[in-house]
Image (tube, rainbow, N blue to C red; front, top):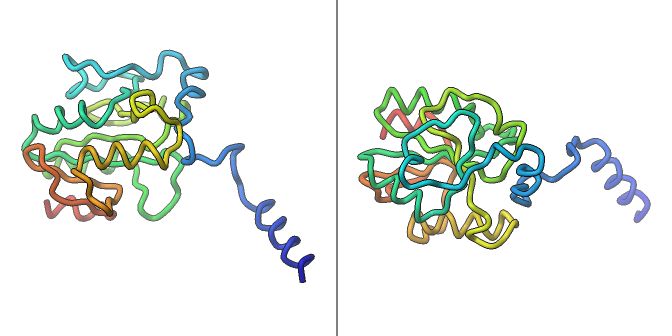
Length: 183
């Protein structure tokens, strides 16, 4: 019986495409900086709330993003998992189009860094944001992501990948893109 379980486990892992890493467990911030030193920049309060800086990812913490959210009557954060393949992962251009049609400001925040996928020129009105792991003093996604999200939503227990704000205040979170049309 033990041999059958071991063979099954080996088969399971050998049949999965892992791409050399388990994306989403770690931030990959330092790896991204090493691969593309000019890709990531730290948040600048003078310019970085409303600009799309070509081929730049802005590293930000919850305090500074909250300041950006306070500037808009309706804002949506999409927690983007660059390598996600589930039914709840959406193309950034499609989300941006939905937000534009509904007069909602979109902030795309990457859950972790990926130099290849973050270097693509998406049709976004703002730069992609990455969570400032140096601020949170950890590279573990399970540690910095809750600190970031709880700081934005005032400790909500269950948060989905879309987080909606009105006048800078957290209203709701949801998983499906069609909900944007009803905000």
